[in-house]
Length: 47
Image 1 (spheres, one colour):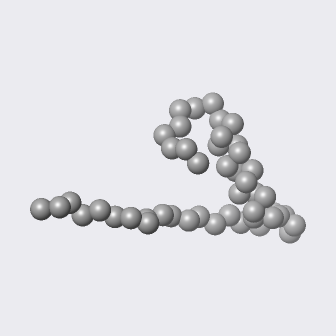
Image 2 (image 1 turned 60 degrees about the vertical axis):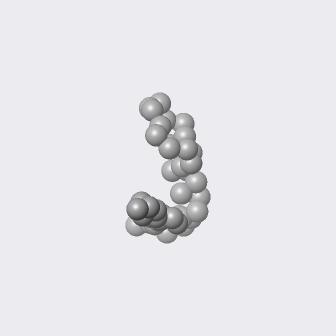
């Protein structure tokens, strides 16, 4: 009996700001990822 294997599973999240009319979600997302990469903690995955 072969185990069931799942492929192509991913979760996407959106980003939104209500306090700024000129916010760019792409820039905000890149800054969020950079903040994670600069963090001082143990990482369990590599973006």
